[in-house]
Length: 485
Length: 118
Image (cartoon, rainbow over all chains, first blue to last red):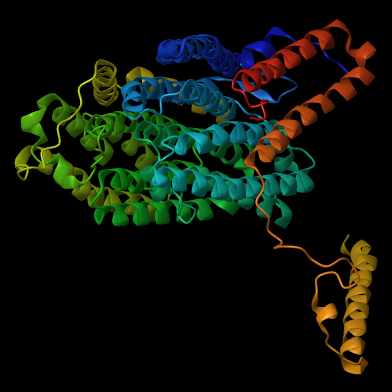
């Protein structure tokens, strides 16, 4: 047995390793410094994200595989890894004051965040179903804890328990699917699977396996009908963590889904496209329609995040390069937008009690015009209005569905987008055109790191919508290299 | 391919039928005399004392989880020790990294006071 480890091996796991090392540093340093200096460890965590981000960015043109083909080193992995790292970095900035004001700021918070992101980055580069599973656990377990971090709060505890129980259940599905896939093809290496499937074609066992993998990953990205946990967990978790979960876990889930279905099982797409398309349609319809009736902004964004999973699933269902590039771009744009929207929600969360209902946002423009303006950009991007990143992403996803001749899916996508305009624009109407009821004027908290996050993410949302050229070129290159045509 | 599973199927059927048969024969022909003794959880054991669900100190769970964690991790040493010669210096360094990560966890547990009983 050859045990030589080459530099490619180390390069392929460089970003997740950096994140894990920083997580351990945070844990250990926390034990040996004075309690009053511990909040400063957030900056160490932020440095970790920056270093990992630089490493991932530097590796973007590398190609190859590490550890006997288990870890892929390609632009696709780095793009989705960067999405997770960016989400993690901004979450540190948003969390800083939130956790301090609520007295839940412990260094473990940042260590768990780092561990979770390292799992997401590993997931993006997983080229073997076992690595997919390990990465899924590595990203999920810290998230279960983080969801329950506002501990005396019963809602947060409920969120953690629900997420844990259902998440463990979904992991079981995924593992069973992997086992059946192995039984059908005799390999769990995604490259080998892609090669073998061309020779042997599909079999009932393989299809059941692929279906179970889809269930396991569909749970992580909150696709209907595996979305039941989402609203309660998103509402109960600390607000910055909700933003992180809605973006990072989704990016990681889609990273694995696109690689398994778009690349390994591409040859038998005739068998699974219709199932993914139906999932996508159901997710868009259910997510958008239930979001209409929400009175709480956090819950509304939870249902909206379900709906957005539906749009990205459209890119998976298309099973073409446009779809994959569109899904990647959408994830990128959605990351900035949603992190920003949740940062605004964090700013609106007063330490003495969180009121995220629509009336709390009335007349926000008068109280903090800057915040209201940024929130407007995020809401417009989530709707998919031109000049925002959300529009370009949706355009490419709809285009991919049309290229794949899934016209009905594209039509459902457009119609549900129109429906979604109602509840996104309602926030804008509340902020700009209505007066707050007396005694209901929730004042936004004003903290520098939080404001940086909101401004930077708004800027990124805007830039991705106006000059998307280089980002588009990057995701198209990633999709082209993965799908190999 | 499916024929090779035939013996297993036959075994399953025979096992199910025999089980059902035994239970059925017992219920149909057996006498039924209920007594207090027969209703107790262990008919020929000692008298039950107190309720079945006793409260346990939560510390036991912590110790149990820590034990599992470190015990399982130590199991990885065995295959490494068996193949020590084949793995050579590279394996040694890798193991040092592994032990280093373990130590981080150990120091964390120790400094947090999870090993103190009180």
